[in-house]
Length: 80
Image 1 (spheres, rainbow, N blue to C red):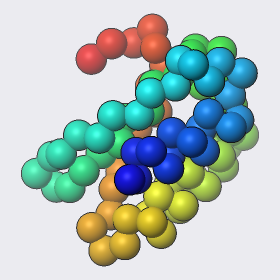
Image 2: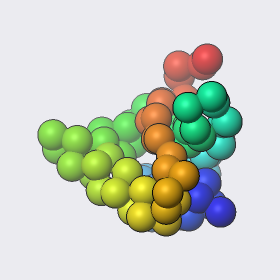
Image 3: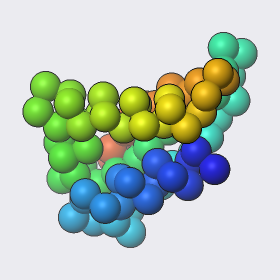
Image 4: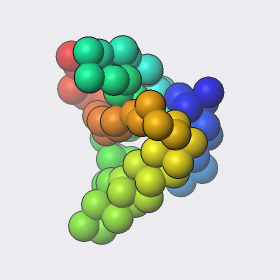
């Protein structure tokens, strides 16, 4: 549910919505939402001084409740 909500929010602000993907990874310390976007859209997703990224993190934290979730923004050129 969190990944779907975050993907919907990110697709709304980028110029290449078809290249947005959100992957939910479970780690020992909790889950992490890995957001991949087109390289041209990375600046939009992060925002000036990280304000947009912080807003995404705030919304996801509110939706996640006690469990919480971390968000990592990655462009599609960098593969892990």
